[in-house]
Image (cartoon, rainbow, N blue to C red; front, side, top):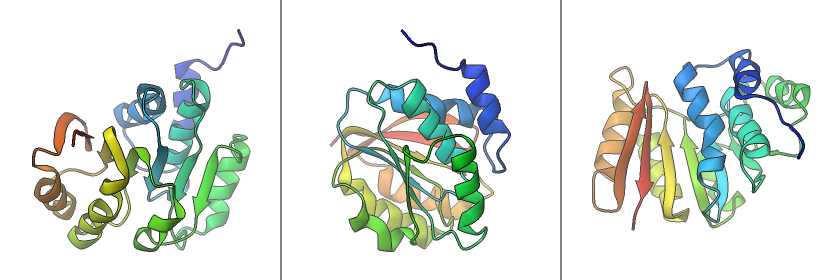
Length: 188
């Protein structure tokens, strides 16, 4: 058995990348790939910025999950430029674990596999964009799959409104809210 990095070492890596995730949120994203090992499908992220959350998911997939799934990272990478994202990915040797898709999320749906085990939605935070991400991507989420919404808080009313309108029904069940990271499961 080859020994991997400790959870503290993984958290330290993620914590040193510029971005907006609390310690709890980083912890959840690191563990998510292992928690969905029983599901088929890919792991998708909408909104990557400089790669903080992407790297958390990729490290979790590599170190904690038995499936070692790549992360599909959707972002137009306009601000900041793609090079910052790429530098962070390369610095941690995760080039083979991350598939960047340099598009807006509404243009990228056909670029990812048809089955999603987990999706982390943290792109444009206005109501219409979050709503469209849910409409476009939730049909690809497998039964039992996980949807995570970042910035589910009073500071981002568009995120809250879209999530409550589209996920507050019998197709989804609430799992938990960690700081501003809302986690729901698709049950139908």
